[in-house]
Every structure is written in structure tokens, then in C-alpha cells.
Image (cartoon, rainbow, N blue to C red):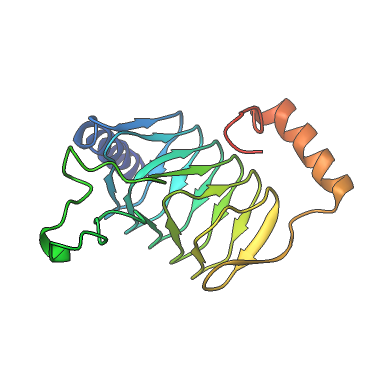
Amino acid sequence: MNILIKILKLLRIELIKFRYRRFLRVGKEFSCGRGTIFYAKRRFIIGDYVYIGRYCNLECNAIIGNYVLIANNVGFIGRYDHDFKKVDLPIRIAPMIRNDSYQPEKDEIIIGDDVWIGYGSIVLSGVKIGNGAIIAAGSVVTKDIEAFSIVAGVPAKKIGERFSDTDKALHIKICRERYRCFNNDRVL
């Protein structure tokens, strides 16, 4: 029975990669829960050893680092998906993200390595989440998050640090050596 479940999970991952092949690129050991939806106008890049939970709506351009954990029901939301500043048009028919001519600013989320995004969190496009950060469940991330910080709330605010400076340096050293983590230039 376990073999059958593993095969079905592998088939689901291959189906996801095929379905979203226009914009989705995934690294090694990618895992994704059922019911998760992806959309990106340009690109959605996922690093190695990333887990994305069930029923997530990840609907904007994004780059996700390695060893990232995204819990169930997380949303990546385009901050400017509709051009709401058009004076002469109702918002329902105003230019939107799916129109080729509409190019919103701040349309990409960048997530560093070793990040944990908690259950039900929402991350707006244009945000950078630093390496090692933790986003508490139910948070709404509207601005950049510093590396190794812990944030919570609506909007998300820093409530603590993941490690002391000494432990952070040790964590980075060990993760670089053993796991090829923290070797990117996307997020400091």
C-alpha cells in the first residue's frame, strides 16, 4: 500500500509540473499537497527540497529558495493584479494581470533558503523574505522581512529573532556545508 501511495504522489507532482510548465520550474525533491494552485505571468521558480502544503493559492511571480516549508492554505497574492487607478473604467473591466499590456510594479515574491511560512499566511507580491525567516500562522506579509527574523500579525511585524548571533553563524556554516543552503544572492 505504501508503494502505491508513493507512486500516486509522484504522479501528482509530475502532473503539476506538466500543467504549469509554461512558468513553473522546480528543484529536487519538490513536494506539494493536493489542491494547491499556481499562476505566474512570467515565472515561478522553486528551489530544492521545498514542501508546499495543501490548498495553497500561489498566484504571482515568485522565486523560492531551498529547504522552504510552506504550510497549508498559504496565499501568494498579487498586490497590483488589477489597475484600480483607472479613472475612466470600473475595476471589473480595468486592465488586469492576465492582459499582456498590463505590467504592474512589484510583481514578484522572493523567498530565501530555510524559510517557514505558517498556516493561512498571505504574502503580497513585491516582498522579499530573508533566509531563515519564520512567518507565523495567519500573518499578512506586506513588506520585506529580515533574515532569521520571526514575524506575526496583520500586517506582519517582527516579534523576535530565530537565533542568537552565535547560533545564527553556526547554523549558516553547518547548513552551507551539509545542505547547500544559504549560497544564493537572492536574499541576504
